[in-house]
Length: 174
Image: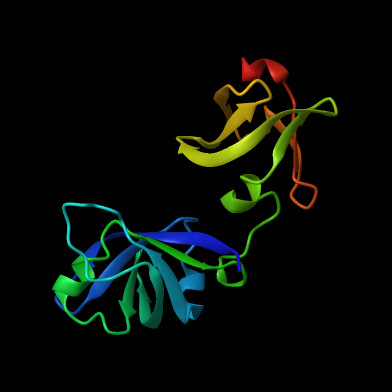
């Protein structure tokens, strides 16, 4: 089962166990259809947490302008909701928000390799947010890591099935 990060717990709301979630994609409508979420808790050794990473049933979701308010089964008071702050919500890929043409899940991009003029030049390690565009963290064939902006100036065709991303300019790798 492939999990996709769908949101980050930014805080709590009210006194009744409400969890404030910011969408990873900026899209919120798909939250309304969720029956469960996988929660990966923020690992802070100074903070005691009675919960462990795992699946939580969604009782209800209310949408706001730039966040969603989640009510999870058995999370009924503020003190319980506070345990979720800093954690990430994941869903099965089938339950993630639908992609538009030219959009990709970070998890899919992270499993690809960069090719320049038909030759493999790097592997993608992760995708990071970088202001105006995402950045691909890549490991070149010589083992050195660097970042490549994920925009049309540097990236050509993306073939997720073949795990191939075309690099338009090799000089960006330094």
